[in-house]
Length: 397
Ligand SMILES: *Cc1c(COP(=O)(O)O)cnc(C)c1O
Image (cartoon, rainbow, N blue to C red; front, side, top):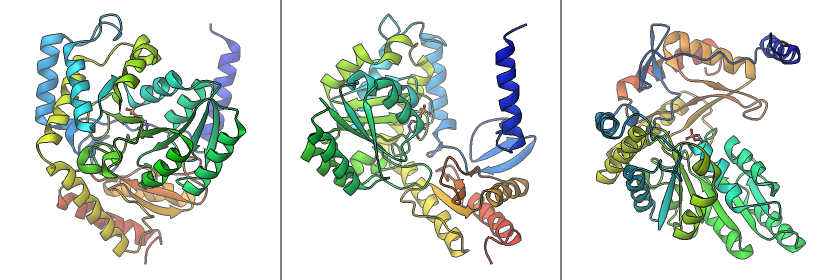
């Protein structure tokens, strides 16, 4: 039964990963992904979700989701371009455009789908894309789908970007050249040098594309990294996700009316994949309402991030050079990093280890994502556990 060649391939490769200790066993949550989670009946302080503002479990979002589901049903029934565009999808897009200070916006089913659809809607094999060396996997895939020449530049290095942009321009080989970058880099929590990038883009007429998955809801009072730098009118594509700080699922592109009109006829996930569920669209809209009313949650995630960073640094941990609430704790050695994360888990903290090849060899880390939903007591408990495990494993004195 079934293909023998497939079975051979799967058995060999699964065994290989397992023997190297690289097979990721997935943890299963018994309940919501809030500040405290339950796994195998054990309660843990959760420092690994992207639910930055704690909105995933917010009452207002839950009620908006229920009401929309009652009114419109569980599913949207079709792709956007047939008859799967509901009035709440339009309202959500108008809300996003208003919040991002752009003419228009288009919603997708995920942030991943935005990159899979938006890049290839505009770029082709006649073009070139300058891509930051540490860009997210979905950006890399989106660039590949377009067929454009991909030119990597050193991470957040605007000198190198300028050099590569100049060479690409002067080669005369390309019709259009795009520069593409994460707004906030999720492994280190560092932020793109946007003023530097805009200068290079203006000099060489580059199309600018910022994927702000980790910046929206966190930077610029929630409006994102582009707003943080006051450069909303200089960036052609602002990508965001509805799945991280916004707390639901989905993604969006914000930009000019012409760009959004074009994506509606050319972005393939918009044309060939069923639209966001009514419940998700309504819940995401409620998130934007909450962020528009007050900066309380955004202020809180920053306050918690600063507190956690300061305390871990005081203890002697290497917390890298994060400029956002993302708090890496760099251990170095890969095995020690995994052991550290495992011991944290046993003591009651859920913080995932991230090692090579996701980050460079010798920079293994445990990454902490404090959220607005964490109380000071939860953070203090986590810090006490960090102290105990850090001393036990000789990471701190
Ligand atoms: C998480 C992430 C995505 C994917 O977003 P989803 O909505 O989860 O699909 C895309 N780009 C970047 C930079 C991300 O960090």
